[in-house]
Image 1 (cartoon, rainbow, N blue to C red):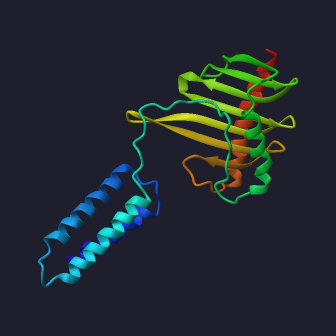
Image 2 (cartoon, rainbow, N blue to C red):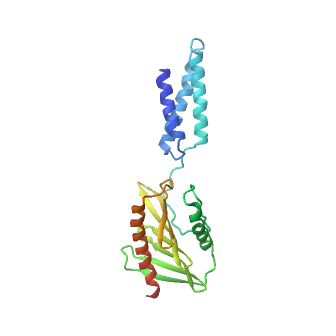
Length: 233
């Protein structure tokens, strides 16, 4: 029994502590196991099984420590508020292309921190299936960013320009899971009109394959071109 119980414990602790993104039901499983272990320790006879009780007690402490280090995730809220980026920084999540992405990230923070604009124009995006609304933000007559909102499909597309060229694109959407919602964020980094990096909120930030980036680049630049063309209409 000791070997079987210990194997179950080690597998559970390992799967739980490798990532702090374990779902709530997994956390409950760990909690239940800890309770069973404590009960097992109390139920051990006073003599003849001291080593077994001692081992169970040590394992219970280890499990309790792991639970505190990696607490259960909070339940997803029933409704997600979808808003544009304001006073936000795009922090690196790994060392990939850190130097190349630095000016893009700095420009993103600079622009989304601006509260006073020279002018803001609005245009309906009636040609799109979502029938959205685009907002064009200017400083001294120069376009700095475009925010496209699609209320019906709960989506927001943010386009940031650097020296007149598309630099950073943030695509936000709400994904439905049963009765709850989850915010999905797709960040795209451009240099000289080329998509050089992409971070999806449900990934760890690892680089995507070049051919995939090429296809994504076509889609994003195509959408940006259509939205930008609405300025003079």
